Length: 246
Image (cartoon, rainbow, N blue to C red; front, side):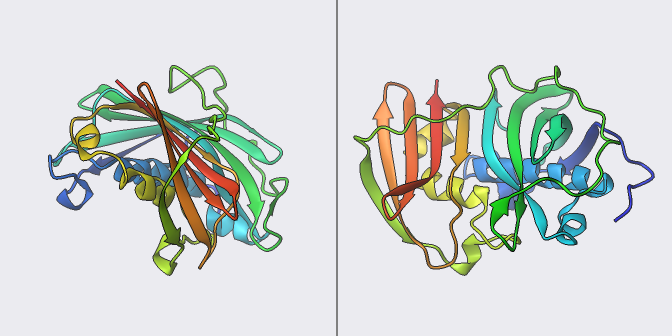
């Protein structure tokens, strides 16, 4: 698609939170929060001419590598949220994108994401083919207090759940979507931590992609106010999630 006439390097998009996106307490699910962030990033890519459709002409797609989300409060049912996004850096095969969520002008969520260009046929990273110089970059405008990091996976982790990847776990890139990893792990968290909004920030690291019928094991390690989940396939780490509690 060509660059849209209304393209801007900073995009703001509004959404109304509906009941299907909410927990029993009426607040937005963490997985749905990530969906809103991903949809907004995708929209910005579309109007800027570097969307999935554009990139597929060269067998390319953006895939998420790392993500940090900081939360002061969750939006709730019927809230109109404004998601704002811009790009901190974009060069070669890598991009760092910032996102924020506001309700009534108050910032509730900040997010920093690290994306890589991925060849969907060769299943490996490569340089971005499409032109992107029209995106103004904002390297010093951060959405989070801390940047994303490499999660430390304790070898003393405990096996808590096993799973086989099924069709509904896959996305348009034909691998497990980052929201699915989060969903698998969040289903194992004490419900009071989630319902009482004890999670003040979380990070995700994506190391190896998972595909249909892969057999995986989910591990957990708890220390102080930090819960780390890791997902392995054939004893190799594929994903890590760190929950930082208040």
